[in-house]
Length: 283
Image 1 (cartoon, one colour):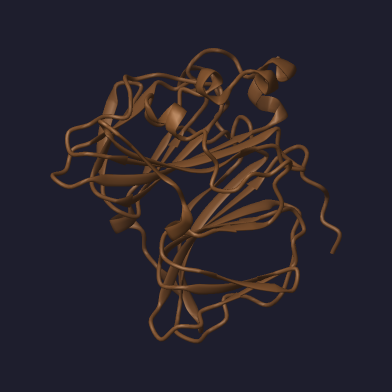
Image 2 (cartoon, rainbow, N blue to C red):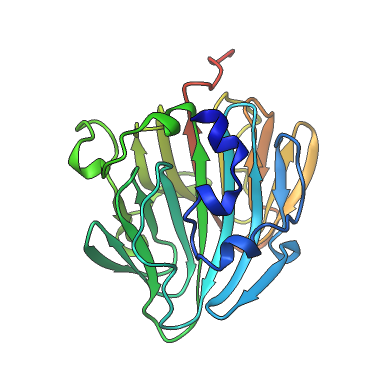
């Protein structure tokens, strides 16, 4: 099954965010043989238009610790839906950048606004629809692990163990920030899932001029997605700027530090994913 997944094209194995965006998302902004730490500048992502809205390709590649990492950004025009309700083995994360989106998960619908998040567990039937009067834009994130190819072809809600993360809807406006000296944090998720050893997601708001953390490294992969403001991210000694909408992929054991170089607060999401292939901590 694993070799089959690698050989099939993305549009076939992924019932991804918008059916007509499957082909749009095949032209990469950056091409990688195997993805290392990278900053994807929002302003440099290629925009592909369709009758439903727009698509932006981010990545579709192997990584040292994942069978595949696939990410794109979908914009739906008012009244448009991503696709009819469908399901797939990979667990999917949807992060709302702007607009109002209604999700359907196993027949249950729920509306969220900017900053909110959907987690779709394996084979739970889902889709998304723009129920606002302006375009809605959201990030679609898929990590494939060795476990992805072995999950039961049945909605996770019907059989997954109680300790595994269920399909979830996280409303930004219901999150309570917890303040520290330099920043505040909102905690979204922290749990093992059917295909991840651990999925942890939080949002950090860093005060102007303040550091986000001391220089450090860790074995799990992280995605940093900028909500607002600008952060300076130094990866293995090389500094980068990440502005609103931009995405930072931090590979396993990348040496990193972040600070807010601006004069306004900067807010970003941190998505940390640990799989069975993640190395053991060395420090």
